[in-house]
Image (cartoon, rainbow, N blue to C red; front, side, top):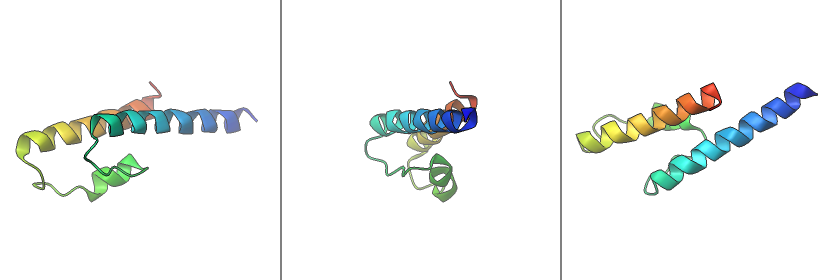
Length: 69
């Protein structure tokens, strides 16, 4: 039973992180899976400085989810 609660807590935390990222990037369509956002991103589709910031923010959010922080 503990693993079910852990999984639910993990999902809630991931949702919270995604929500925070969506607030920080209101013009982006991130979807529910940040891995998909990274996989579907096409390099050069944004000005370089925006691209670096966007990819860094998404990567940081993914790292937070993986680390549970």
